Length: 362
Ligand SMILES: *Cc1c(COP(=O)(O)O)cnc(C)c1O
Image (cartoon, rainbow, N blue to C red; front, side, top):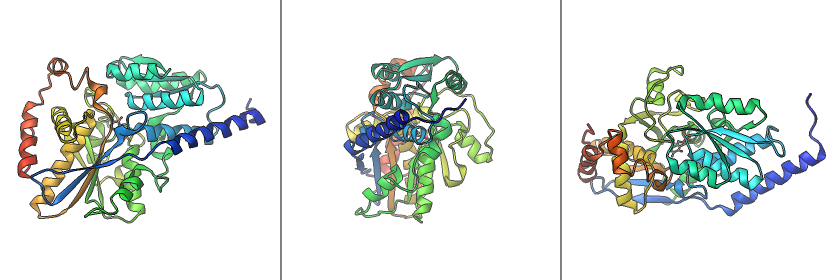
């Protein structure tokens, strides 16, 4: 039987919301870094450094929103355990907020997730439930929920938990930070799609503000967003290894909004890894694979603009830090074992950076 919230429960909710508000007040916005490439003198590139969040990725925004959403919808009560399915970044952010709120958190993750992300969850006091098949995470998280846990459900809720009209969401922040730049309304914003939450927020916000900026999703070759978007079919699934964690899903997640996306560019995994290394050269800091995927798509769009003689700006995201992939994407042995050779793509991308002309990646 459903029991109405008593005064103590209501007070706990008030306190939990105050805790989240204080966390937001202590946190600063993330930097928008400008990068110049010699082949593109008339195009400004900007990368929003989402690795600068306290929990190291753009999932800090999502985790905060998911807790707020669960709390304000009355789905999370005092002492209730919390669970979610994740490829790692979200789990780290959710574990961090769980600790802050005094809640017990369990992350359901694929066994193949970068080991560093698994230990990061554990260091924050989270439990980890590993499944063999990445497609199993949803059912396993639901299993925990049936036993009383609050399922934050990033894949189901990402698109609705975020305030897409404002509240300094990622799109509002980017557009605000560009205000005094030479081309304050970017020609393109490029992002990946894991939950689809980021692309949904950006796409809606651009329309809401009446901007001409177009939205491109940068997607690992053959992954579900690309295949589903092209066929306009939400039912497709694909079977491919998750090399670039955080994006490249095997199914069309509920938060993938096809209608707000203007273009999807598919990027071979080896090219994402090559671009990730080029980012390190440009910025002097390591970022994860999905940031590399973004860079490749930015360059492809830039070569088109350059060909047409267009000027303008292109904005994308640095999604998480490279340390999380020390033992995988940044490890030469791991690359060899997984049959990945970024060298040819690196050569092609260097040519593109230098000449401004597109050099095919394979
Ligand atoms: C989640 C994630 C993305 C994609 O963001 P969504 O808003 O979930 O679509 C990209 N890169 C990394 C590292 C991520 O963890």
